Length: 151
Image 1 (tube, rainbow, N blue to C red):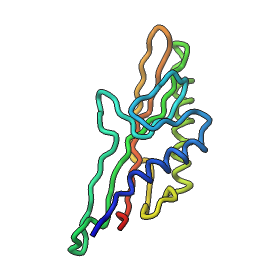
Image 2 (cartoon, helix red, strand yellow):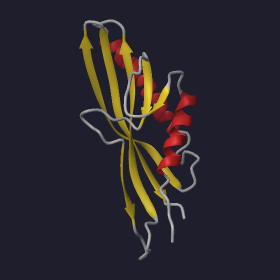
Image 3 (cartoon, rainbow, N blue to C red):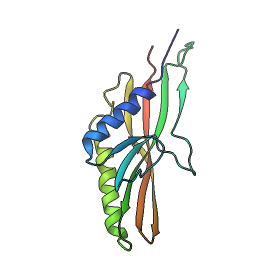
């Protein structure tokens, strides 16, 4: 009996959902920036966390294949702020983007993907770095998904 993960469809749905939710670019991939002042990333990876997603398959009812899966997709919202010393403004801007991304999921917790029962932001971390050319503020967060596998 064949089965399939909902991960590819859920990731594509997140990108489409977030493209509609924020005016900034939403990229599919491991890095933030790409010359942008503000960007959302689905499948975020960096040197400290090289994992784009993590999950497990759950066997129920003595099934020969996993019937459910639970996974998290690592994501980020980031702002490159052009001046130094304006940490509160940069934090407000990155949290506005983060809130819009999380809110978009809250308005569609199945992501419109067959099999997905719930999706939502679970953990987040705020990172800030300041250099002579400005401030970078990044919120790294996970989108947790609970789904049935597709058969």
